[in-house]
Length: 204
Image 1 (cartoon, one colour):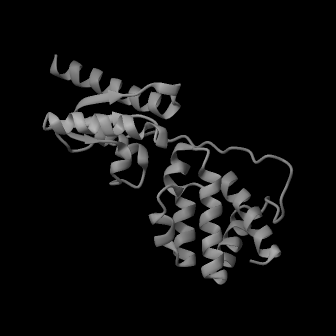
Image 2: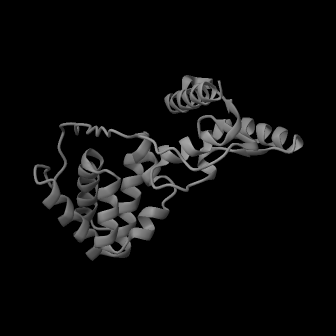
């Protein structure tokens, strides 16, 4: 890859990380003809939703792949970013990008689902070091004729937090691994606790 194109990819990545939301990615996919690559990337949109540390790397990987396979599509994305976020420089800047936070009046939609008596939901970090723990919990569930799911086992909604809410909402049992005090796990536990309190109030 030419150095100039590489520099453009890096600069474009910086602007996207600073400004993009899921809707911007959807528009870029439609305009560039690469919706499948964006939607099917295993971590891009999920890491955006969670604000995970690997988001910038995922953006870089997607942009590089598009540039290598279809440079015209890359220029379409570049033009989209320049038009929508004209204040961003085309070149790298030493100034760190400001984080943009969007607030919405409604976070969750209550699903039309019922409790599944054999469903166990596991909440834990997705790091590889937790794989043995996850496997042990799965094996224990199978022995007890229970189904064990983690949020990365499903992708039913366009917004990951709705997937988490739906999964917890219909679970009979919730298992949480607080090792490392992972903030995502803490947040998921808060959702589970809220749902449990609401259900207990209704049943009482």
